[in-house]
Length: 325
Image (cartoon, rainbow, N blue to C red; front, side, top):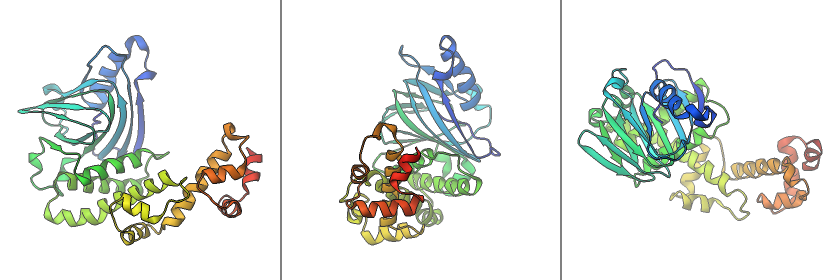
């Protein structure tokens, strides 16, 4: 799950699933076509269980992000493979799995939430148990602008207690949850945010630290706030105080953070509830459920208010939308 990125690669998205390969040749094709040719890794399965490899990638020019569920595998940059000249810095974050890294004199094991930083130009191997992983490939020249002594990043372990690492993983998940690839303008901004957060997690230099704190870190915190609002939208008692407490921040800080995008807590909460109600009204499995009950289940306490907000947002009443489905 470490995609090699080319400097001139266009923005775009890709999903690869080993399940789409013919069963008799699945492992061989996965190793040769996906492993050797695409991610430029010598890949092997580590147990007798059927191969499972389902990964999605976002390409942002010279930077890429991948998220995937995989079975137990080994991934190696061998001497023949490093001849490709790829010197990207790879950031691997296991979300549910465990990774053992063997590179030079380093032999360490990472658990869920930890981060592994390694250089693609060095020979090394990772052995991963089955799980879900986040991977970033970052251009070394861009990271060198932000990180002091980038040459030390032959292999580095970032502990899960690192706040910037957690925000980096969350920002990657937010990006990968999008329904469409990031466009050129949005992709450029997202790439800068990823580099900022990676630098903060690793150790940004003094000049880059202030920029990264005010750009990438704040963007990740806004994404964290928005995700928390969507996650808790069905709770009718959810308040700004709850959001601030979950972020270990003051309410005024969170208000200012959201305002940077022209948003407010109440508007985002209402939007999340309305979208959830719309989805449930369109769900044939809930056809027999009363509209009032759907409104209550989505966090609304007043049915009349729900009807007014729904009509204003979607241009038709909940009843009309259900009839149209």
